[in-house]
Picture 1 (cartoon, rainbow, N blue to C red):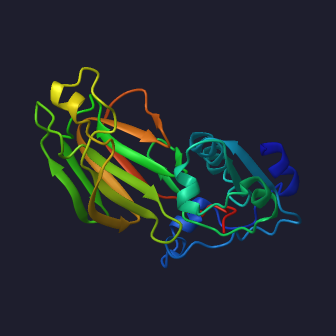
Picture 2: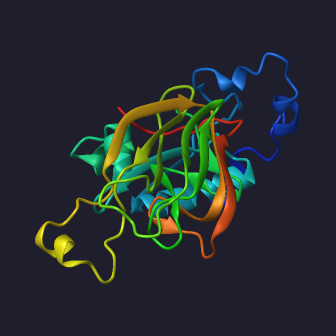
Amino acid sequence: MDAAAAAILPEDPTPSLDEIAAMPDVPHLGEPQFAPQPVPEALRVVVVGSDAALSAVVTRLMRADTMWVEVAYVPTGDSQVTRLWGLPDNAAQFAVEGQVRPKPLLRDDAGVAIAGIATVTAWHGGELTGEVIVDDTRLIFHEGKKKAPRYGVFGAQLESGVNAPGVSARVLTTAIDTPESPSVLHKLRPTPRGQLGDRELHGRALQGGGIDFRISIDGVSRKRPVDRVTVYRHLRDLQCVRP
């Protein structure tokens, strides 16, 4: 993929990421735009697999700064991206014949691209202890109870939207994972996983700080807990194939 991109565009004549960041009018934070690179021919990558596989491919393009490459997606199982992008049933045919419609690209502070959704939860699976904000608005400020309730504050779920500003976040009011040793009450009346609160915040970035966060992107968890996390809009938009 890297070699194919280099063969089509050996040198990028457009402003670098540093130059874009220094622009006073920050046009990169508005509605998503088509890539400005003057490529002689389009290069389209078709990802067949899971949302996590799509995230891995987009992460590689982002780190190589070849975001002008078109990205199409054919999911092979349950997919949040299918819902967010509005992909049709004939995804394989559409991946080849569909047109590019740019969308904001979200990334975390570890340099991982978010294809569909990301979650910020407690590492141990109980309630979250910490604060989560979207831009300047607080979404969560909570101290988790030692014994997790059936419904509470279990973290935040972030969606990578197709329009500006990009971030859409809600509170997780139930745990994502079922406890290993559920109580009798849980056995009799299981609590639905991953229930979301009604309040939804939109912005360009999400920041969180607290105790032992688990950060998961498109179903893939980081290997170790963290006390801080930032998710923000990348300076270049994703050239994705979607209706």
